[in-house]
Structure formats: structure tokens, C-alpha cells
Amino acid sequence: MGIFQTDGAKLAYEISGEGPTFVQLHGLTSCASREHRAGLDMSGPLSGFQVLRYDARGHGSSTGRTVPEDYLWPQLADDLLNLLDELCPGEQVHAAGPSMGTATLLYAALKDPERFASLTLLVPPTAWQSRVAQAESYRKSADLVERSGIGAFVRVGASVLPPPALADRPKERVPAVSQELLPSIFRGAALTDLPPKEEVSGLEVPVQILAWVDDYAHPVSTAEELQRLLPQAHLRIAETPEDLDTWPGRSRDFVAAHAAGVGSPG
Image (cartoon, rainbow, N blue to C red; front, side, top):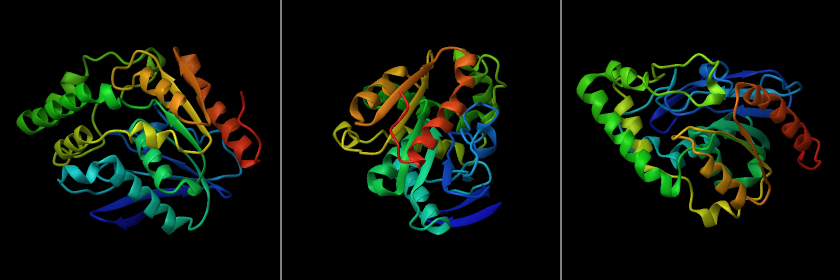
């Protein structure tokens, strides 16, 4: 495990394998070690790649501050780009990430598109019109944690059914975030949104979008709008655990195609 000092946080990361770099990100309140159990770590089938995983600021083994603005998605994108500058300077990388990880990648690719050979956007979060209600939910969650503790938040979340694609996966109910930082992280999430649509539509990077159905925090509508906006995007939607099981293989094939400089698979 390595530690990288960035503005206001120390990012914990790990690197395995050798070859071109593949970066695996994670979602809100998760961490690098949890994504494999949820079926959202796309690095498993890869061979001949160096895999970089890291915990976003305030998550997992990384540190953070009680400053909501520290957790805006553009800030997380800057963290990623700074980490890449440190660990693989000048290298073009492949990257995948769910939800908050998807948002981080979009902002990072807009800031430095030449840095990315391909993007795999997993379960894109609420955005634009759908972000308003989700932001209010995050603010209420922040208030609940401050008022009643992280246990109260976990109990409320236990009543929420997972999307069908996760029916056979263990549910991680306790956030990989400290009680001290969780309210700030939720308030930061409430303050942020995906980039403006006109900016997204100018992103010329090969993109694979993998979404699932029946998840209010990750609506298919966001994935469909990203497919419409992004010039080089392909979308697949999972409805069952068996569909979800195909994602790592699809990602391997997608990355391999673009690593070889050929077109995206159909």
C-alpha cells in the first residue's frame, strides 16, 4: 500500500501487475477493496496490465477533512490526475469506475482527454434533472448521521432493496467512511453534479457505459443520456446477476480493443 499526499488528503493506493496502466475507481462511501465483492471491479480478467486501485479522499484508508467542498467531483478528478502524474507520468491509461467513480472520470477526461485511452463508466449516478432529489437525500443523510450516528444511517439503508442485478451479492451496509467525515462527504455529494451536457458531448474518448435497472440512485436515464451525448459511447444494461457477471469480460474486451488501437466491439 502506498500513500500519496494531495491537497487536503493522503490517498492510499495499491499497484499490481506489469504493463499499461488500468485504473479502478470506486463509488460513494465505498473503497477499493469493496468493489470486487460488488461485481464492480473490472480488473479481474485483465492480463498484461498494471492495475492501480486507490481510495478516494475520505474513503477507506485515505484521509480527508470535514470540508464538503473537498468532495466535489471536480476535486476528486484533480486528485486522480495528480495521482497519475506521480505514479505514471505521461502515460495514457484505461480507467473504470462506478457512480462517483464515473463522475470523477468524466471530469478528469474533460480536463485532460489525452490522458485516457478508454473509459468504462459503471452505473452512472443521478445527474442534471434527477440530481435535485438525490441532493436532498444526501443532505438528510448528513443530518441523520450528525444527529443519531452512523448506526442510524445503516439501519435506514437496510430497508432499501438492492437492484435486481445485485440480488446475489453481499450488501455492504456500513460505509467505508468514518462517522466524523461522512456528513461532509454527503454534503459534498449534494453540492456536485455531472459536467454540463455541452461539455460532455465534446469528449472524444472511447467510452463503454454499463448500467443496471431499478436503482433510484443510479437511474438508467443518466446512462442513456450519456450514451446520447458522448460521441464514442456504447451502452449495456444489466437486469439480472447473470448480466452483471458479464461486465468484467466485456470490460476486458473493450480495453483490449482500444489498447490494440482497433474499433470498439459492437
